[in-house]
Length: 178
Image (cartoon, rainbow, N blue to C red; front, side, top):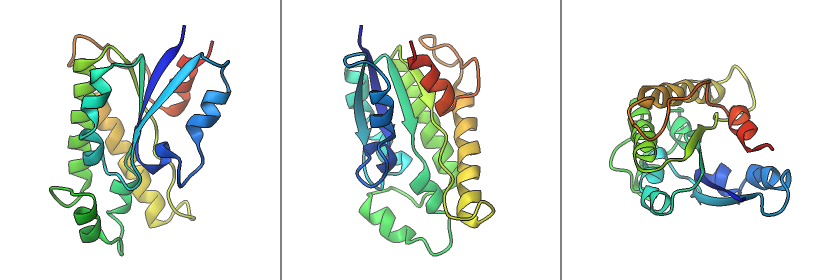
């Protein structure tokens, strides 16, 4: 039986500008075992992702992964062209950690309410070249904010049980292994 996986995210998930982590995952399984569908866009913010959910819930998969927030975190850094990003990505407001948490919580809540899929929130990668630099600190802060949003939605939908362990890419990948 083929496991259908909807992969939601930004350019990391789209894999046109980065390593194709989903391709690597797919190659770890026998042909036909896993079918991945990407719902992602280069430069996307969590708000942009929330606009693509109709396509996901219209044909609900078995598993949904969410890797979003790198652009939201980058927008908090000094020197980031926030106003240009707001215009280019058609954001209704300036990105912030609070808005990220609100939007991500709404995404997870809708997916839980309208699908029976197992949902895995993948951790943001470390941004920047220095582990103690501003970019790395921003990605860590947004990662914590995302986990808080995920946990706040736990148990709200009768269709999906709350997570039994911290949602990470490692725990999500473990569910796909035979």
